[in-house]
Image: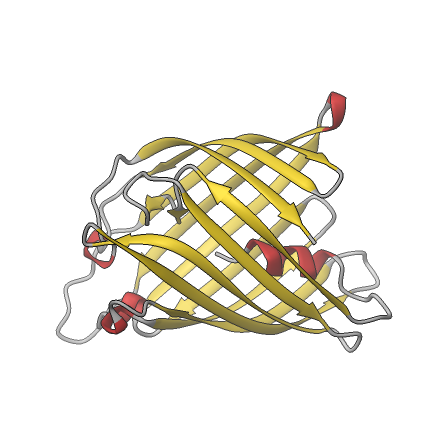
Length: 223
């Protein structure tokens, strides 16, 4: 969900406060494997603050396509991350997604995770996923492997599981994943990734039925 928060986790334990962010352009905004931009390019802006006492917070604004109309998704998040003696780090926090053109789809999530230098795990819980009367768990694993020439092989696997709820039919799980190459040059970062989703769960929470597979190109400038 929030790439910046994962970066904060790996940097936990720094002695000074840090303020930063990035501006990015994506060929397709894929949220948990499903397009939120109807397959069209959108910009994203992320701002974050990392407190010396291990707290962090941030906000992300992303272009979306809601019912074939342009719009913006705002995601605010806050949490705590600390490094363990083993070299791993843990984090816990919460986020809130707001869609100004469709407040009925606003929702919040709680999350917790563990991360090492090259791999991280997170578990999310939402009591009203995308504003629906649907409780969900989402588990993800993210990792990278350094390659020759300054490239990194990056990978992601996620599973969305709707939870049983009184009077509601339990939907099936949705699996998503991505595999790609990333490269950094100074403050710039570019990534080319193949993204896929199995479909099948409460797809009605999304706005368009774009292809379940796509190649996504992104470029970001960090500051």
